[in-house]
Every structure is written in structure tokens, then in C-alpha cells.
Length: 68
Image (cartoon, rainbow, N blue to C red):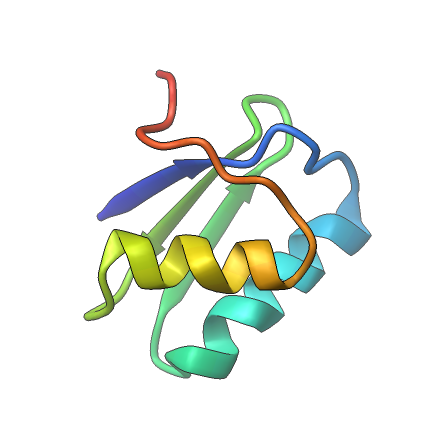
């Protein structure tokens, strides 16, 4: 499980865009977004770096590791 912090994720549109970006590079990924903590949890064969890059390409900053 990879946990990433996306500080500007604030609405359903944001979570959908992030999930779409991750699934574009790994269609089998399991993605869970928490708007309260701004954390995204991903189960994927891809690296944290690849997932972060996909989220950044979608227009969101990523901080790693995510705060708990």
C-alpha cells in the first residue's frame, strides 16, 4: 500500500481526476481517496514515484510520505 498526500485535493472532481490518472497507468490499481486527510492510498505494482508523477501530471501537488 502506498500512501500519498495531495494537499489541494478538496472535492469529488479532484478525487475522480486523481483516480483516473492512476488507472490510466495501472488499470488494476485500487485507489482510495480521503478528502479529510488529503491522503490517497494506492495498491499497485507501480512505484511511489510513478504514481506521484501521474498525479502531478493531472495537476495536483504530491507530498510524500503522507502524514498520518
